Image 1 (cartoon, each protein chain N blue to C red):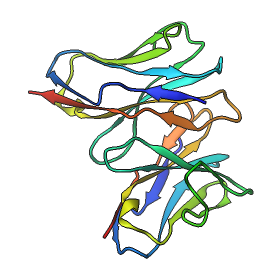
Image 2: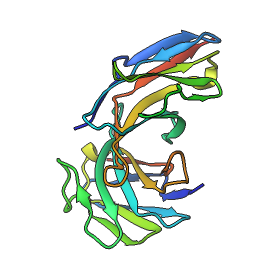
Image 3: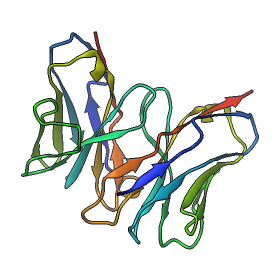
Length: 116
Length: 116
């Protein structure tokens, strides 16, 4: 089944800086998703990233704060820009590949971000 | 819009006992899928079980079973013979119909603690 390598696994960053999170899938996938999980909370979808088109952002998330790249069918990045302590969360990527993964869904192992 | 409700923020269960985690959902779609994930403190999302809306039988995966009551829009997770390693957050999630609505909507989660 499809495997996603997500990097970094964790990071501690200074406020005002940016962090780019990478997800590499070992199969070509059409759709990738980026989620945020704030401490003690559920997963909230940030955006859907399709190759060859602009990412589609959910309400409350904007491209200037969370720019996403999807240069090909196996790779995507999420940047958390101009970070503040409120951005401290776990960030997860997910890919949909019908017939693989767990009923089509595979998750990266997550990036635990702490902003100080 | 889809919505998942988990009304149990936390549960404490004696080791070896069975436990039921509640999940109700709301959707206007006829075709949908329901998932349960386990999230240990490491942050990764571990797939447990899946139920399709047209599946007539309740899904089972080892010690996990899903009590699917479509008319009541509930999809409770049953863990038999609980183990200390079952202590984690548990999320119920839903996806919409295939091809166009693959994003997952998550509930708020239940923190399960197994007591020796």
